Each structure stands twice: as structure tokens, then as C-alpha cells.
Amino acid sequence: MLKTSTKAPNLILNSTTDKLYSLKDSLGKYVFLYFYPKDDTPGCTIETNDFNKLLNKFKNLNCEIFGVSKDDLKSHNKFKEKYKIKFYLLSDYNL
Image 1 (cartoon, rainbow, N blue to C red):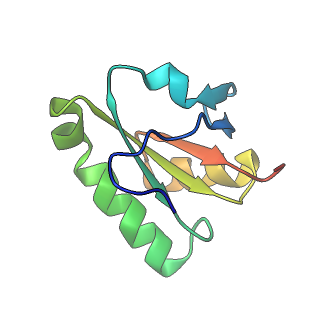
Image 2 (cartoon, one colour):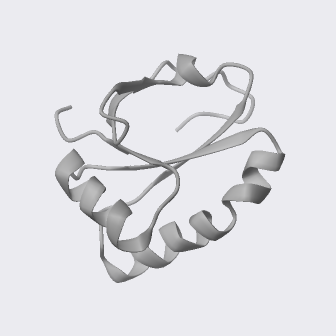
């Protein structure tokens, strides 16, 4: 667990952009990472849909949202398509 105001370590994960995502890619922006257990489960779906609805408010604050779970990119892409998720999901499947 990081303490408040602690610089986050660089994070490099597979992304639904089909490229690796690194925290360095978001330099100069705020980043909101939320971690969830599994795609397309009731609680995770509600949480993700809520962030999706608020995406423009986050963007207005120069903040990017990324959801992170252990699911692979195939599962993430299916989840994104089903719920029309407009932000990227990151996978720590291979870590």
C-alpha cells in the first residue's frame, strides 16, 4: 500500500489498446486506477459502468481512468464491448 503523496512506481501492463500501458504514458495527467476481481461479475460491472458514466467529468479534470484485473485481454475486450466501456482496461494476467 502506498502512502498519500508517494510517487507511484512505474507500472507496465497489457492494455485493451493492444499495446503495453505504462504510467509514464500518462505523465502530466492525473490517473485513477481501480482494481477489480473479475470481468462481468455483478459488483465489478456496476463499478465499471459507474466510472464509464463519469468519464467526461474525470476528463474535465485532466484525469484518465483505467480498470485493472487479472482477466486476460480477450475477456477485457468482451466486457468492454458488452457494456460499451469507453476507457482502457489493463490486465495483470501474465504477471
